[in-house]
Amino acid sequence: MALEKFEGWTFYQPCPIPDDIQSVLAVNEQPSCAFKTVRDAAVFTNYRLIIRDS
Image (cartoon, rainbow, N blue to C red; front, side, top):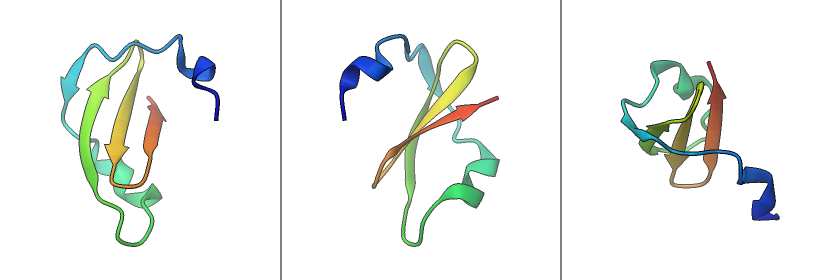
């Protein structure tokens, strides 16, 4: 995957992991941290990066 797709995102500051992220996690997937972006939240898990549109 090309990282150019993510150039426009800026992670401003850490934030709490959103409660509703649990519904999109795979079996054995655990969220580790989240960051605020301009209008979204980016959640890092042990498997992937999830961008949550708020």
